[in-house]
Length: 154
Image (tube, one colour):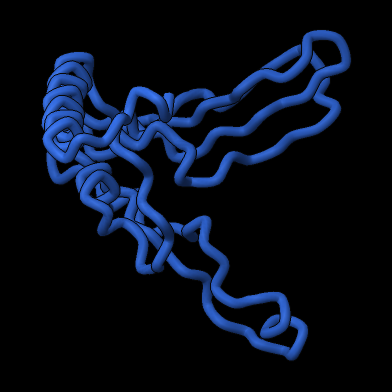
């Protein structure tokens, strides 16, 4: 909905297919292409052709994160343990922000889940290897100065 003409934009004709579906499964919100404004992805299982992704997007002019269509979603971290659940616990699910900037900074979830390791580029790794080789040379020099035969340990 917009406050200028056209006031309402058509989202699309929906999904049409002549291939019958054997089963359907929705992908969790955290698995969607948020920056393309994908609000739903359904995996369609057919008899002959396998699995087909069906993507539903909301057209937006901006390429910024759209917090109005992506509220906090359930995080992959469980809210309580099996023992708590079996005892009758009914906690609300732990949620996470879907904003890519908050997810990259580690502030997306409100849980103590371990952070994923950051990817490193080739120049970053080359610099790290050079630094480690320099440190090895330093340690080998210390061993030689102490007259410790470290070559026999190899």
